[in-house]
Image (spheres, rainbow, N blue to C red):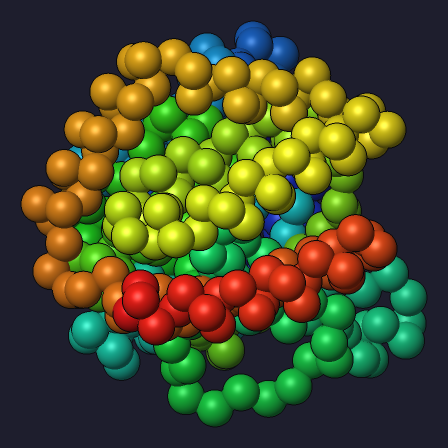
Length: 347
């Protein structure tokens, strides 16, 4: 788990209590709490509030580096499975058992995601919880969004394969898979890091599955800070340039340019113009492209399955459930139609 500044003061106590109530054997679990952008005050608070956790201080706010730091210590301690968990959650008692069992029952799965429900804000919602994520969807332009968002909770049998990627809100990965794919790419800093991890595991021949018996409630709030926009926009492009084959990048480029122009235009009244420009300027640096080319070679060397197997599950529409945009509603039929047109040449 990763804390950032005073984040833990808002969420840690409830999360900790739900973890203490797990029915998984406590002696088989090690808890690592990474204090990102650590201060003496935050460090003291975490150690006091969660004494059974090992607190790992870090000097900056790099979320991917923080996850790698926790994973590195867990691997050194001999952990067989690595679980990455947001602090702003409350887990049901069978949450961890359900996660671990999903990989025990599916030897071909490298990663599994919990069934993530929206935290109930009323008695009605407690009786009828709604879904936050049943897995996430990859769009052919590099966007990612949740599957099932806002729908009523329902029973799910077995362990369905997630066509896109597992959500980093609650994710388990085999220790040997994490080591084989090299963990999180710290260049991503935050956002799209879970897509990166899932796609890399899939290309290495592992599946990503949903663990329906692993249930937790996410205190999800959609906010749009300028820092968030920068990393979301930069990283979706970074991921596409790193993973997508040249043919897909070429065929998608006409609509990609139109989309980029539309986002740049929308950022002016939206108040995130500078972040959008910064995210584009990142790709004007020659070192960025040197890094991307190196990453493409590394991914190609590690690939065991055809990229077509991933691309067949890419979405044509962009469905950001939190954003009701007229422009997006108008654009989606065009995006979907264009994907139907080029899909046959990609797969």
